[in-house]
Amino acid sequence: MNAQGSSVFDTTYIDTLTDRINKLDACSDLKKLADEALASFQAQINAIEDEMAALKPIAQLLENPAADLAKIATWISDFIEGVLKPTYQPYITMEQQIAAAVTAYAKLLAAIEQAAERIGACVVEAPALVVSDVTN
Image (cartoon, rainbow, N blue to C red; front, side, top):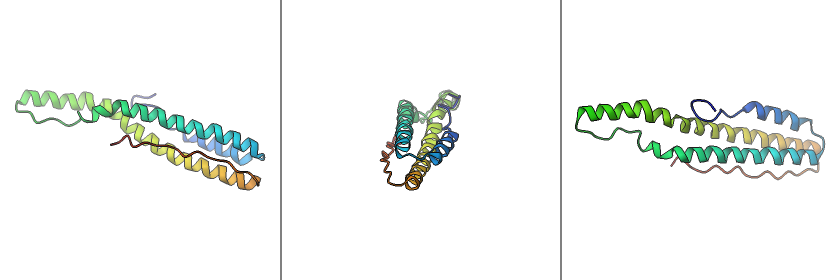
């Protein structure tokens, strides 16, 4: 984990999986690899979304409320800039991670479909990647 939240989605993992998929010749091997990899994606999405949900209440505090006294306004502004915005940064990073994961998932599905066609008489059922709308 870095200072901005969870580690960035590792696209080299997808490249490695794609290479492995491209070398498979047996439908059973393709199904096994697909099941493992695709389930892993959903687990990653769920973990990121849980973290985002935990951070969501901070979003409501990112705007400086109207204040009449200059000192209170300065303190609130400093608190927002110095504490709340840096604390909220992992949420923004996680949004980017989900977008990267969805793109990588599509790439992996395409590789699985191509391998299944190449192998012939191979049907791999890929679960839909469920991404909730935690940004609202």
